[in-house]
Image 1 (cartoon, rainbow, N blue to C red):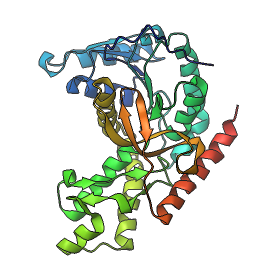
Image 2 (image 1 turned 90 degrees about the vertical axis):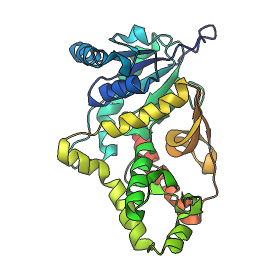
Image 3 (image 1 turned 45 degrees about the horizontal axis):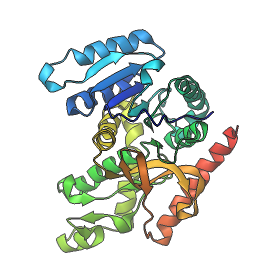
Length: 323
């Protein structure tokens, strides 16, 4: 299938379609409303009652907290959207890793794309459904849209969690830290320690300056805590949705308001880092056209090897779905 971008249909309306109105989709809609990123938000779900109820609940809040038009719709209402957010899919179960969801969620998202194809006219497609790297690559392949117009939230939430954990260890404000997680949104994710700064200094230099220990054991403890965060939340409450909703809203603001930002999100590589036929997260420029550029940075050998491990894991799964 090929999605057709209609050249005459380029009026910018700040219209968003969210496909899947469960906890994640409805939390995203609510966050978009409060942040006033969108003028129009349509919720689309196979369970029509669910999307109707969520839309009514969201739009009946205090009027001055957000003025977007929020409603339940059908796939035809995805026409002329500037941003289409796909959250449809089953949730991760307790003890399950994200790659184990691939069989079920590829089928679900393939059906979404088949329905969406009939009505697509324009707009960036953002994938939230897990395993996000697998789904992002498959949707890029199915739609054949220009590179970067389909991208996944990838490691943006992991990066946020990482900054939070590191700030707790250093007892400083998270805003002082500039750092990210790259690779797979899953088990093989990793921080590029050589690029992480605190108050403008390399993190190791900062720790030395303030007399804070910072050895491999501490680094590994921080990384493990970040990796386990999603599973930990699921074990407590059965789902995660607020964190990803705020991350999606941050990205939506960059797209809908043309305020380009840099975030570690997932998109289909075209030779960067020697990688092809795979979607992974690296720091990328995100703007009105989705991922506009993947930044190729000078990492150390260990970090580069970590990225190649993520590539191998994702390609092994993709090869099972090479239709």
